[in-house]
Amino acid sequence: MSNTRNCPLTPGWVSRFLQLIRFSHTIFALPFALGALLVAANGRPSLRVLLLVLVCMVAARTAAMLFNRLVDWSSDQRNLRTASRHLLLSRPAMCAFLLASTAIFTLASVSINRATALLSPVALAILFFYSVTKRFTDATHFFLGLALAVAPAGAWIAQTGRLDIPPLVLGFGVLCWVAGFDLIYATQDYDFDRREGLHSLVVRLGIPRTLQLAQSLHLVMFCALTAFGFVARLGAIYFTAMLLVAAALLYEHRSARRLGLAGVNRAFFHSNAFVSGVFLLAIFLDLFW
Image (cartoon, rainbow, N blue to C red; front, side, top):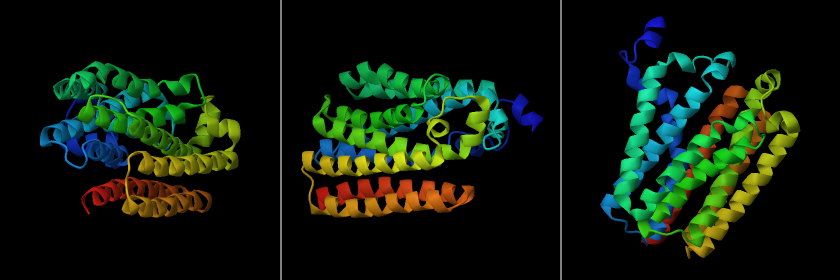
């Protein structure tokens, strides 16, 4: 392990890098950005805008995750769940990738339109700010939700050059969705957060009340997604698909109450990936069917 830490890049660094930034979790926010882009473009975004939005999404999330890993470098080593993260890549390598991904995001944003160019520093500030919120507030889960809510708003602006009601409604839904599932995920760190004296809504409320709050947030999220369908003038396919979203959310909450740590992790990933995937597929079918 010492070789991994002393050498910025060693064989297998790509897989370690993807593991470090939890690349598979990109599928959570990306479908909401693409869905917003499709609606804003009436189903026909240009290939140029589509590719630039994809670059922005991946680069921004990569930068945010790397910044989070660097900020939490010491605390992650004391947490059994995250203790191996600092062994995946060296700090110099993380810093280099952070600078590179930030630069890529900025260049891609500047290449889209004037609005995205001007707002790119704001987006980065929101993404990076989340990582320090646990030092001073229990509401860190809502800041994470805000960070991911930037995705559909940014995609809409990339297409139209302005911010309208539909992406605001969708963004609010994403905020509630993310805050809810992050609360569920954070129950795994209840003992660590209490021992370390970290600001934690889970510690403040206790696990049962935290799960109740997460359930309420997901109910609001479902209402927001339904409202988005109305303000975006979507049709029957979209609204029917919302029943599948509701079923996935119910599965996630039942799993959170009944399963152990490994089971919660699987349910967390599968149900949230399903929700975002169904959302994007519903919009695609609604626009093109």
